[in-house]
Image 1: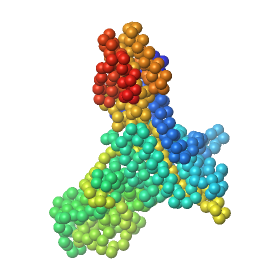
Image 2: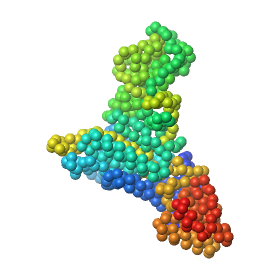
Image 3: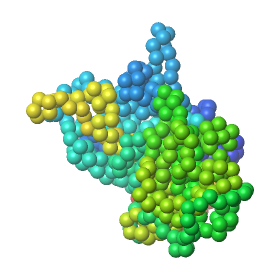
Image 4: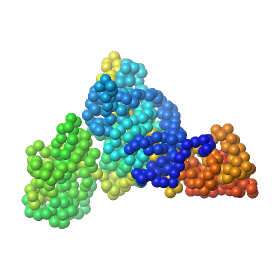
Length: 567
Ligand code: ATP
Ligand code: MG
């Protein structure tokens, strides 16, 4: 294609609200255009890249036996009522009415729609297994849309759903999807990790996320460099922590501890390691239908509470902080709370690592008092994994030290079981004519987010560096001076020959200065440029590699062979 025919409104100015490289370069390079918070138009270049990514996703899924469908974006709210998610999904779900006062939602994900599709057309085990997907718009009214395509409100997602007659077959497909996703992200030239993920209230280990490694990622991943264990910090576990500092030997007693409301102060006051202190964290837990409860989480003073684990431990939708006043209203003394002396109606969850722990110190739920000599041997309570795994903690598989790194979630695969098929009464007849709910899996890819992820991993201080299969064009031909007939003739000739061979070429045939064209090439970021300039009088041209901006002078006779060799 010719730059003179394309709409590529590149700019030098960094947009006000953009801080991430991908956001800045996709806007400045003329790939996308902002419409409103979390809403973007795709301009010609952006559309080309989006279609390429989409095509790779489709190709690999089709090869893996999946079938593409296209579901309505506008979804009857009744579907969501049936599955019980209308309340649960919260404010991210955009709801509206039509002129006849019927309720609808804009699909943020399509489990309900897909289950209904299959329910209407499949009756027997003979039609199973099935893996249906679509690559379509989603809308989520995100609380904080930001970073451009990374967290939009309207975005392109591949969402797939599989239907099976048994759990084993669903697990087989889950593994098939993991392999397929790996292939997709490898083809896109991404460095990524497959990590164990939080499966929310469903629990189990049936959920994996695909994380593109990038410092700007919003997710924290815990990794082991010895055995390759990787998990989202929301789901990461560790070998139970031990402490080589002497435990504080003491008989059970109440101690006057004025002004020691923090773990640090308490640790100094008693001169003990925080490992032997109990940290009691109070949260207001919010549930379906607006119900709320106050919950105390108890863990070692040396640990931090992981909020997602804390939420899952009691099946809550969300946790909120409480003010000192709110605490005192229910009889809790801020800074001195205890998991063993608890006002009526307040629930307590202990961290697994406190099970049978001894020589502990905790609050007395009384101003200025702590309890020493706490012994939890045989103490019956609700124990759950609550800790946030830190760098240096031990790997749960091989005990090597764990490390934190950052990632961008580009895919998520999930073993659902019958979580949706049961409430939606989606059943099939098995070999014995018995009615059973489908075993399901669900699989997502953030297709538009991938554009941002590729650039986060592949850019420099001048602009984008697209990977081989994601780039809008394999090559940019820059005709340095459009008034020089010889340069134009050679540029046109190479452009035609390569295009005829099916190579996608962008020909910069504009009247702009050479410096401007070079800057645009660096910003747009095709992997290569062929510069036809002053050297031509000596029979030479230049090939520039975008990654590293390395230059090669070659003879005009070698252009085609050299380019094809590199491409
Ligand atoms: P996140 O934790 O980033 O909000 P999620 O867990 O809500 O993601 P899923 O519901 O699993 O995401 O959606 C499938 C995929 O869609 C994600 O893996 C991600 O790549 C992409 N995605 C989710 N939300 C957005 C968004 N607001 N903008 C762009 N892509 C998104
Ligand atoms: Mg989300």
